Length: 212
Image (cartoon, rainbow, N blue to C red):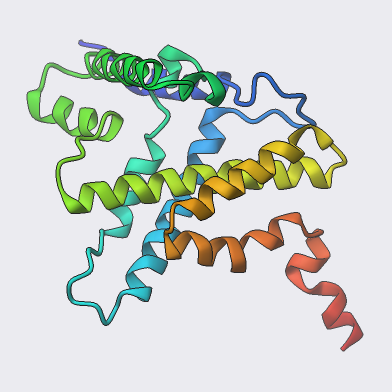
């Protein structure tokens, strides 16, 4: 009986921690981060499609498809590790080389699946997407925005716990999000992100209901 290690390798995402150069009040691994990004990317797609509901020319990605890309966007870090952002984007040469490494890591992971071309191609597309259409370009932008929003929320949580280590990262990450000029991301930042810094009572409105 053949045995395959692909899904067992994905499970090891829980051992790869993010923000390695920062002092964390709570560590965050790429497995939980990927869930957060998938949830946000799905929401951003719904918001984008709603904002463009009357625009017949607008590209409207399928929300669950975008969510799948977001869920798998960091899987290659099982092999490559989480390279700090200041290094990853230091210059074009490093960024290009790292993307090639990510693609090779994706191929390595898909080789842990059965020798089935269609199955491997399906996962290779999720792990290392081809950006060759307007929809794929928008999908990549949405996933990137969701990734940055997730990072911003991490900064909010750290700051609310009294950790000032993330203050500069919070500001620079917000600037990056706003600079994307993605209305859905701006909407999420304005209407949904503030609650991440609230107490449970404030999120659920318990105290307000008690007063009423």
